[in-house]
Length: 302
Image 1 (tube, rainbow, N blue to C red):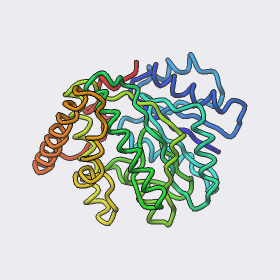
Image 2 (cartoon, rainbow, N blue to C red):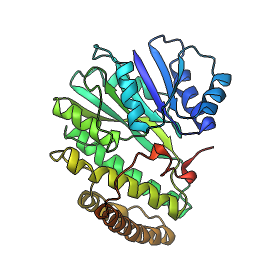
Image 3 (tube, helix red, strand yellow):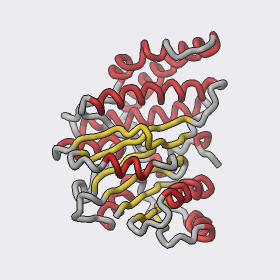
């Protein structure tokens, strides 16, 4: 059984597209179940009116955050068969048509426990924040390709990743699932694979407030890893960002305007790290964004 879990937060239209994308590419298959987990009853009503496929399930989240809900579903959908797997994604993104088959093919290697897809920005390059998103995603693609080829540890993309069932039944709530779950598999001897032809399309923040809120939350989640898993090989950090990105970003501009945006991106990234570390010193800890505090409106596709 392949369980596709779509975590959403009051985004009915974009979540509908996410569900239909998976149902369409797996048409006729009985070993597929697509579950939307969302804390709003109105989302359940909206989706149930429009989706008649019996493979679709709505799970009303108790409202304790994304990680809490995923832990519940991991246990409810548990299987002792390691050939069964979960595909985890969000309601405000949608996967490419061949994503499921690409992931399934990669799991043919029994040594692979986690698979991460390739985030692709849908933002326009002629805006500053759209350009920033393309630079960031290009850098992530480059790094993950390298780590995957070398069979090293790396963190997955929360936008789209997959894990074998029966290996990890739950995970800590105090950090992001796309960081801690791959680590738990790595500790059990499983490899992590980057599957670039399993694409997931993402709308990124389009203003300073949302950009900063999203990135600071991500930094806090990753800094919490030092407490939860101090021996985790860090692939997302300030120093790795310098190592992988400082010269790479300078090769991306195709105009003077984009070159200026690149310079601004350097200062923006430095500012957000300083701000995030200051907040961490003040005990402003990571909180699950699905609780509503860190929802960034400009990332919604609706």
